[in-house]
Length: 406
Image 1 (cartoon, rainbow, N blue to C red):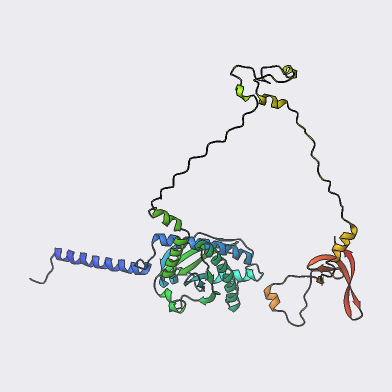
Image 2 (image 1 turned 120 degrees about the horizontal axis):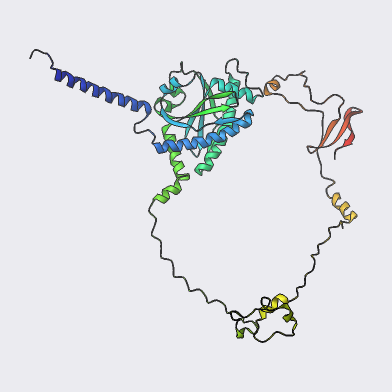
């Protein structure tokens, strides 16, 4: 041999390298997508997507009440992911909100929001118009978004409780700002982020201010637990229908029905009903024949019933008159005259945002909506009953009633 490879040997060697390289690529793709033993089946993905869809639908209603803007969260997309795919595909920096389940479920998930979306939501929560997004994301934003997520995921837990048929409760969410470019170890956020996990993506719209994507990250064991509870709660009926039905026990033989009660014969019924063709009373016979004394023998008694007179009288109703004794009414009011009621005089009202209230200090002047000299409101147990003007009695304030509100 001269050490030279033939063309057949070269082709065989190249095909072997291609095969090995393809297997390695397939294994890498399986690791990246989590398609190994820990991956979710299509049925499990559908169940997780259904649970997430109902949960986020309830959360959208809660968020609407917080920001006073129309909130729309679309149907989710469920897929396997790794930390590398998250850092490549998602905007950064972003806010990670960890939700831990303490009752009913064992595990946690992470809600990922974009930084600008958090600024808009917190500005709306504080009474702004959603455009005050300048500056860095601080502790105030994180605290506000944590409270919003606490209410949203609390309502979501209530929906899960109804869906899964068990009590679900969460601990207060924890929000943190994460720069995916500089963040090196995902296990510092959650241990399950080191490997493959489940990513549920939603499209969220808040009025005309927000139109972006939010994510929920589940550990695989937690997603499988959701699937198992979902099958037990929502799909239990289908699982029972698939199982073979037990053989029905023979029903005890029913007792024969009792014979129908004998009808009491009417007078003259022994003569039988009129034969076909015989004119019946009220049909072929003229009405004048009815004035002739007693009925003939053999004529059924029921033929005479329409001619019986019926005593019809107009309905009489009780007249509703005031028969209360004034002395008795006076005694009834005496029973409650000693009940104490809270009387409040309201000088005026106004509306302030949380930011304005945090700026309050001694000496701050709060302008009310009521005009100077306008009558003040007199409230009894919170109900406005009168108007009056403020007077000074020696060293105390008082109110002179000027109008009674009916």
